[in-house]
Amino acid sequence: MKNSFNAPESGGSYSGKFIQRVPKSLPARLAMRARQEGVSMNTLVNTILADSLGRREPA
Image 1 (cartoon, rainbow, N blue to C red):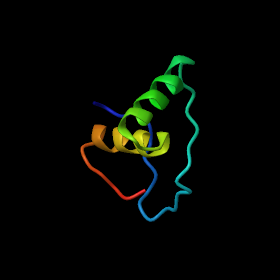
Image 2: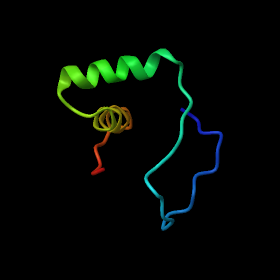
Image 3: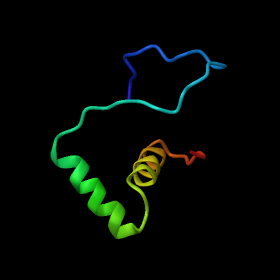
Image 4: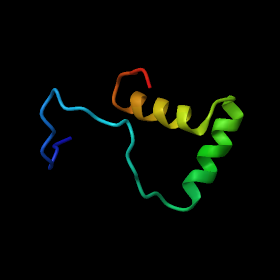
């Protein structure tokens, strides 16, 4: 996949927060899956994102 954005230079600091608009149905689906897996929605989304990037990082 080709990136069409400029990546920040290494050494920068990040707050660990970002805002993403999603379809209205997605939060309900994420909440249901998180409940099924016995984890918080935050943990579920972190895991899904990390897995999709091919690595897991501490929250």
